[in-house]
Length: 266
Image 1 (cartoon, one colour):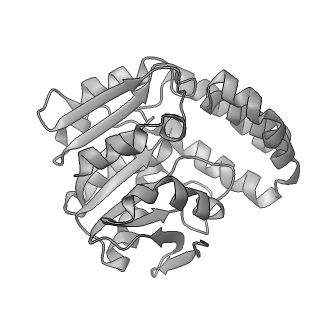
Image 2 (spheres, helix red, strand yellow; image 1 turned 90 degrees about the vertical axis):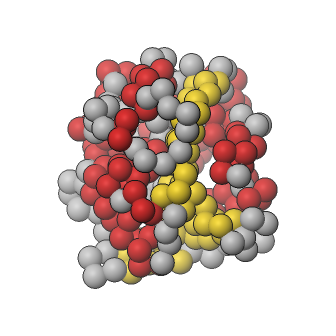
């Protein structure tokens, strides 16, 4: 199966996305910060979320094609909301991972009519000191156009140690062919996180929320998930779960992750 890339066009921007599944309900995935556009991995994403195909039409959105020099999480959320509206999407089942979770939270706060249920994976209420240190290191490598170094530093932070060691050679090989445009794109997107802070607003979310974190998250820091859970508030429509030994990329590494999403959305 090959999943084609599509584009949603507005007066202000073009945003790549892909979709799969034929279900009546709309499930939207907002991926995290990456070294290449998510559309390059469309087939792999569709395979990973195959269990959703029957009941959901699944949309996966990238960031807009032409990034401005400064592009905040709030800007990303506003553009993603416009993309939803251009495609006629509303009351969606929304899942945001890492930076995508930051965008998803912001979108749900600013455009509550668009979101029916909100799932958050490996994300934070604000920039933590651990996250800032991680971002600074990644940005230095991007500015130096050190593709191998950036791929390895990225992989080491998001994967558990055993998995990172298994993937090390593949990541190093991928880092040898990073075009200059991808370094520039990564720098803009990574830089956007540095001013992010929703810690005083999350209790205002109107929709049911599932928040999944990891105690060994080397990107966010070990306390980020607990802080996010606390900021969401003690509400009956908020569910939380903390993984161990799955790393920041628990959304890829935990075998029961998709089942948890399905149960929450159902």
